[in-house]
Image (tube, rainbow, N blue to C red):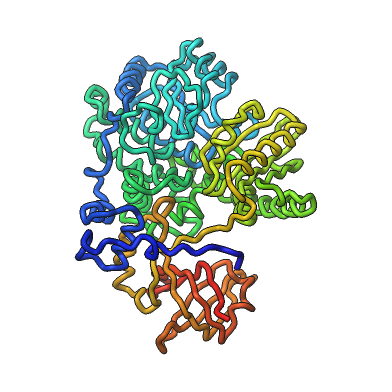
Amino acid sequence: MKKTVWAVKDETEKYDATAMPDVHPVIAQLLWNRGLRTATEAHTFLEPDYERDVHDPFLFRDMHAAVDRLRTAIVAHELIIVHGDYDADGISASAILTHALRTLGANVDGFIPHRELDGYGLRVSTVETLAARGAKILITCDCGISNAVEIARANELGINVIITDHHTIPETLPLAFATLHPKVSGETYPDQTLSGGGVAFKLMQGLMQDPEIQKLMPPNFNAKAFQKWQLDLVAISSVADMVPLVGETRTLVYFGCKVLGKTKRHGLRALLARDKIIVTDAGSSSPITPQIIGFKIAPRINAAGRMDHGKYAFEMLLAETPEEGARLANQLFDNNTDRQKLTESILKEAIVKIKRDGLDQFPSLVVAGEGWPAGLVGLIASRLKEKFYKPTFVIGINEDRIVGSGRSIPEWNMIAAMQTVPQVFTKFGGHPQACGFSLESVAAIQIFADAMHKLADTHVEHIQELIPTITIDTKVTLDSLDWELLGHLEKFEPFGIGNPEPTFLTEHISIVGVQPVGATGKHIRLMVKNGTPQIKKMMGFGMGEFLKELAIGRAMHGVVSVSCNEWNGTRELQYKLQDFRLIE
C-alpha cells in the first residue's frame, strides 16, 4: 500500500458515556466523531424529518424580492431565462427551476452553456444575445456570484438577474436584482451546506409557497407534492458537487434518494434501466444511494458537457415522453463510455510527462497538454491528486483556448490561493478543493505554475512531505461487525462528504485464502480469521496489485467497513478492506 497515516478517533475523542447512555458504544462513538454530543442531536441525525429539518425558503433575505419579481413576470408573460452550468449540479438546478416555472405557466427557456465555446458562468455576449431575444429576467443556477461585469451589463440592458449559487464569494459582488447564496456576508439563511441544486430548490419552494402564485396554479394542483418530487434532482446535484451531507442537505439527500427510486422523469428511468435498476411507481429494484448517484448517474450527466453539450442532459431530465427520455439517456450513456476511454489515455500521457519533466518535485503539480479537452481536465486533476497527493492543476491547450482545472488536498485552500493572484487569470472560480480557470496564452502557463508553487510552498509547511491521512472511527473485531450493528450503521446513510461511511480498525487479521476477482484481476477476495475459528469473506476493491503481499499465511492490521451484499436473493455481510499494514 502507499504510505498513509492512520488516525483512530476513539484514541483522541473518546465519547462521553453519560451523553448517550442508552446507545450502543460503537454507535455512540460514531455519533461523537460526527460532532453529535447529545441524545437529541443523535436522534435528529439518525431520524431525518422533512417537516422539521427543511428550512423556510423565505429565510433567505432576498427570497421575497425574487418571488415577487417572478410572480410579476409569470402574469405578464415576460421571457425568463434559466442560465445553468454544464455539470450535474448546474444542470439539475436548471431543470428544477425550468420545470417549476413551466408548470406555473411562465414564458421560460433554459440555457446551458457549451463548455468549450462559452466556458463557466455568464458571458457578456450571452447576456447581449438574451437581451436581443427579449429576456426580462435571468436566473443563474450554480453560477453568477463571480460575474459582476456580466451582471452589470444585464442591468444596462434592462434584464433583472436573480442569482442562485453556492460557490466561493469573490471580493466584488454582482449588483443583482436578488442574490440567493447561503454564504454571502450578512445572509440570514441558517444552512450553508446547500448545493447549487439545493439553492434552486429553495427558490422553487418559495414560488410554490407564495399565496398569490398559488392562485395561478391549475385546479387540484398539489404544490407540496410537486416540491417533494423535485428532491431527486437535489440529491443528484448535492452528491455530484460533493457538498457536505449534513444539516439540511442531509435531509434533502435522504429523501431525495427515496424520490429518485420512484422518479417520474422518463430520462432518469431510462438511464437507471441501462444499469438494470428498474424504477416503477412502487419503487426501484435496488435502493438508490449516493454511491449509485456518484458512480453511475452523475458521471453520465456530466459526460454530456464533457464530450458534447450539457444541454442534452438538461433535455433528458425534462423529457416529456419515454421515447425521448430513452434516446437522450442512451446518448449520455455512450458519451460516458467515450469519456472513460479518453480519460484513461490522457491520464497515461500526463503521468509520462510528469515523470519525464520532474513536475512532481514541486510543492504543487501543474501539467499541461496539447489537445486535452476542457471537459476532461478536472477528471485528470482529480486522479493525479490522488496519485501524487498534492494540489494539482491540469491545463488543456486547444489553439487559443487555455483552460485548466484544479483539485486540492484538505491542507490547502486552492481558491483562496488563486484569489491572491487574480491577474494571472482571464477567468477563475470554484471551491477550496476544486477550481476552474482560463489563461490568456501558453506563456502564461509557466507564470501560473510559478505562482502556485510559491503559494503552496508558503502556505503549507513541508507540503512535499504530506502523507494522506485515513480517519478511522474506532477499533473493533470482525465478529462485532454483525447484523445487529449493521442495522444501526444503516441509519447513518446517506454517506458522503461530512458524513463518511464508518471505518474501523481491526487488528491481527489472519489470511487463510486469497484470489483475484474480475477479468483483469483488479480486485481481490480474501478469506480471513480474526481471533476466532470463524472464516469471513473480505473484499479488496482495486487492490489487485497487492495480491502477492496479501498471501495465505500472512497477518495484517486492516481498515475495514461493512455492508450488506445482496445477490440472487441472498444477503451476506460484506467486509471491505480499505487499507492494510502487514505484520512482520
